Image (cartoon, rainbow, N blue to C red):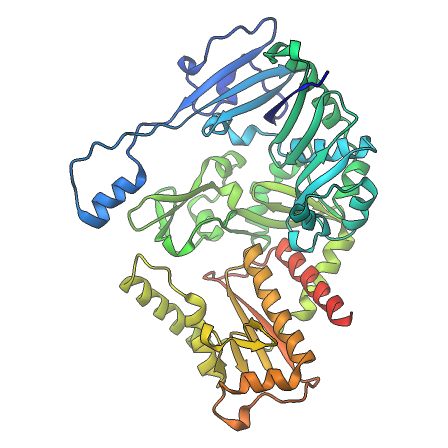
Length: 532
């Protein structure tokens, strides 16, 4: 008889929490938000969260910014959510429902490695299991990610081979045909999406859920260092127990090793041009600055790093993004010949060999001789400030402003325009942002993963096309260069170089290890392609 499939989003809380003290793990706990239900002999809490009633956001914008105030009878919306907390083997699981369910959990009490490690272990244990998809920090270089497009399953052996050297997993989707309890699970940081299997006689499933959660916990507790190394090649996240000593040391490290840490934005899924101010506590700042925070908090505790918030505000003083100081901290330290990285509030361990190889590879390709003069930088900043002041509600093309100044400075030619894209054999693409003799400059503002991917793809496609179709390429480019003396050569030579410029508004070097890793794997991939 076919079993009933029920999909649940499961979160595991850290050790040492007691379900009899819900105020320690439920955010802004209120007893009257608990829902009475038949618990049987299980220790569980059903807890609701209701959002406030409000008009749709677009109505407010219509009144305040478009047509002015008016009397309206638009219906109000109210978001809601529920979380089921259930105790299993002295640990607490949380299962979320609705849009607000996940906000019931204090995010500092979540066992972040539970989801990804459990899916990993299931894959290791079950030789019949296959991987449906994977997502990683360096996702474009991961062959497994290509399978998302085709929906193909991948065997264990193929998976381990394809992820040999370049991965830091963020998500792993596993399909099991042998398990009687789970048919599929998607392991992520913080949560595990599980497709549980129940007999028809076990619905409603609450009284039959505990044994299946126990099996998940057993899988997670059985994870060994060797299991982790199979999928995390040279770098892997530490669980809460492994991170404890590093967190204890962290406040002192911020003071004694100031060059090893800085503040950054842990998420990039927002329009940075809408940010009008950065607020920490009651202070406003032009940029995220760890030194400024330390001046105001000369002896921060680890609890301070969790409780103190960073707010990104728009021109109306509304919050666009909010994080803790801990989530915004990035740092690299070395302990006992091992490198540790703090990123997004999580610690990662990196093998010494991998850390040194990647750092050296990036140091070797950085062109320290190419320097943008300070007056050019200031002119760019001033033009951006003026553009924002004149058009506060419009996105400013900061790249184009910089490219124009760069082109004028080096007496180059600006190709940062759609009209200057070229066609070769029915393919249309960008030449570069600025061209100076045989130097191709490709520029990208900020450095999120998608932006860097586009940057490297642009440079690779252009350079490869010039190398393969030199005469036709030069002919198409030279149409936009009025000075014949500066025409691109019809013969591809060794003096052709590609330069990548990464721009940001920060006053200090903020190149993280993961960004270095992405650069290295991208460049190695392009070198490999060029040799094929």
